[in-house]
Length: 147
Image (cartoon, rainbow, N blue to C red; front, side, top):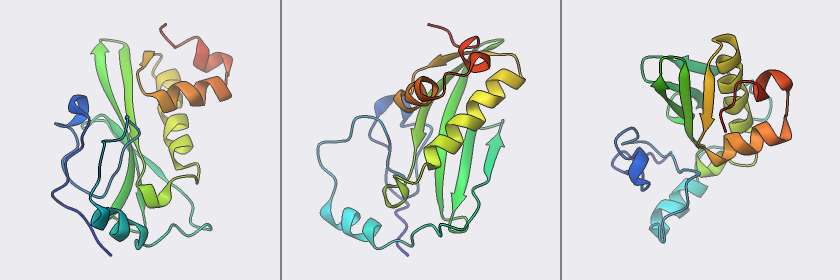
């Protein structure tokens, strides 16, 4: 399995938080990615459909993550506190080889459930979280969202 350890996230607002791994991101894509990286990513192991997904919450790093195929690959949702009781759900990343399997949906649900359980208010900077809430307009989510 190929693991790119020196890749940097191309979105300037997230560059300092994500500095290694095989993650691609859901920000606007960079204009070009080396063809060799794309080809090697396509050769990565794919997620076993029967494997249950477990979302982990790392409060110290302010992120939710799902380890994929062991510990080498992971999907991540990043957030920041922007006030004492306010969080900004900033960004989700799912490795390209794992997209289209509702992995980001599990991260989004965990993040929104966290907001509700902790009685926080949330800014939804991440377009995927916005989409998730639009598709799952639960009143207990909507009352915690800042517009």
